[in-house]
Amino acid sequence: MYSFRDLVALRVVKSLLDGGMSLQRVRRAWSYLNRKAGLDKHLAEVKLVTDGQSIFKVCRKEGEVLDALRHGQMAFFVAIDEIARSVEGGVSQFREDRDRFIRALKEAERVSAGA
Image 1 (cartoon, one colour):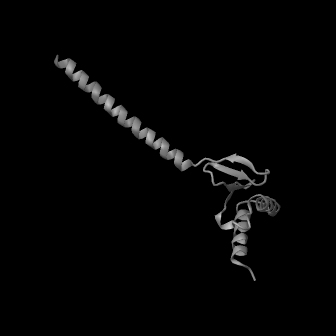
Image 2: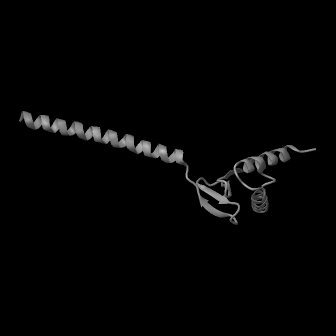
């Protein structure tokens, strides 16, 4: 009989295999993460992602991922939605500043034409 944890682990392994990982790489990554991070004990709290070449554990620190197939080497993680929001905010601020500047120029032009 399988426990709930076993079913979750099987589902995780299947999703990694569906993501293009070989069974051998999944086993290596699982073994490493279990030794270093207690994967079996804290499986429900772990976020794993794959690019089809490696398996990454998303760390608690935002912006960091651990490469489970490269002996825990930290990899760079980019949250694109956060970057997009930041750029969008910058563009909005630029437009407001530009519109204010244009209004000030027109006002200065109107004042100087009337003088």
